[in-house]
Length: 100
Image (tube, rainbow, N blue to C red; front, side):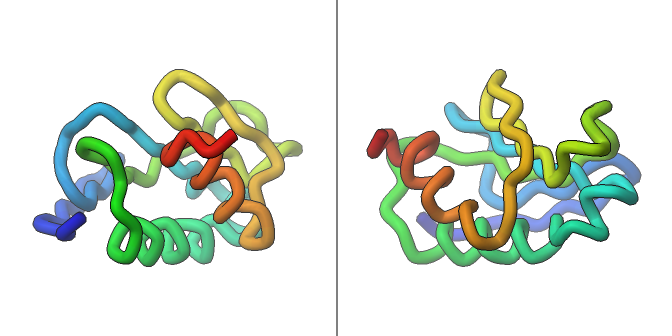
């Protein structure tokens, strides 16, 4: 997958394009302190180096109302709590690459 665009706004930044899979990483205060930006960097690297079926939208979002259970990542309509730099690759493989 080629990363084709980077858009900054007050709510989200998007890498890639609008597509079938949507990944939102909370960057609110609690999630930020627990490594949200490391998770975003890992996801960018995975998207750049992995053959992903279809299009993927990667966006940063603000509070998902689960501050004590961060980092929170929403993949499509599924809210995944307690995401860390240690488990994001396994989550990506299971949820995005469908290797569950």
